[in-house]
Image (cartoon, rainbow, N blue to C red; front, side):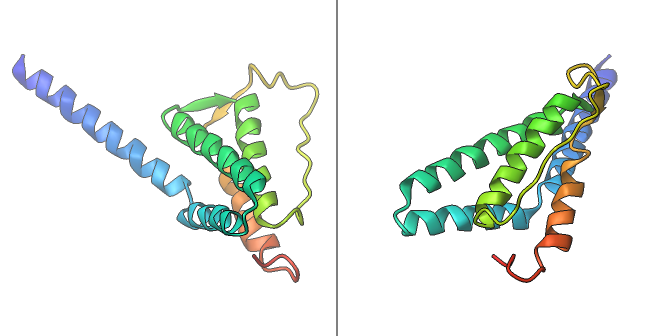
Length: 140
């Protein structure tokens, strides 16, 4: 009985460790660093409204990252919400030089369709970092 209990505890610990590792790998440290630097910049410029807006969006995105990383799947609606928040932060960081549109097939029920959590955001982040970031006029 005791051996089963200890094995269960060890399995739960391993699962939590793997979830934390997955979260850390999904949350790009450069994105976090750049976002905090941008917030600091707006504070130093005494642009209270922009810094508060940025911080609120960043905070919401971090909550979504933590929540979704604990789940195996999320609704397409939730993933779109995460993408929207992520892209709004990037738009602020690039001083409104990014324009985007999220299009979804109207045949999909985005509330019911489930996808693996954190599936699309890393792809969009890579597209921005490796596609847009190095274009002339996009450096930040």
